[in-house]
Image (cartoon, rainbow, N blue to C red; front, side):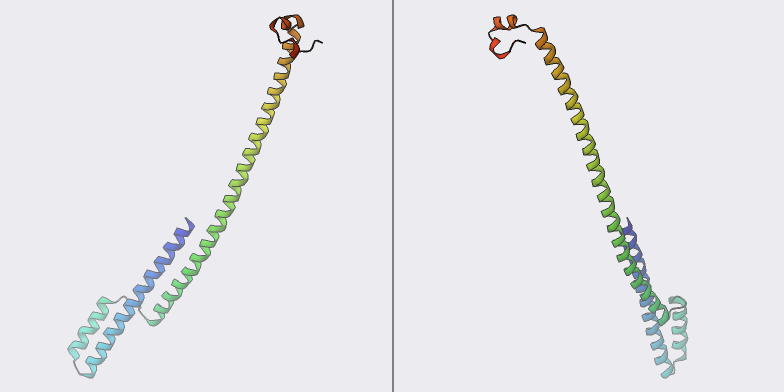
Length: 152
């Protein structure tokens, strides 16, 4: 999201710079035409060009405003790069936090499984002890597996 903000910021100032430059070039072209018309002594054309300049161009279009627009555009590029770096660092931190959480969850799960396995083994041992106590050597010898169970 932060990178999108940086891109939009840079795009906005780039557009303003292009508009300011285009307006200044148009003003320069009209001013050149006015100067030529004055030299040729064409007062009607001079008046028409002055009216066109007032109607077509926004107020305050100067070389200084074009330079300021350029500086703002360059600053927005720098800001965009810094925002990108900040977003990348933030992403890396979040990635590390997520990995730590995953490791923690897996550790918790492994501990749980160990506890359950230990309880199951204890219950199994108790069950086997109960089975061994309930069986007698004589009962097992009739099944033919008396050699597997040692009498106590």
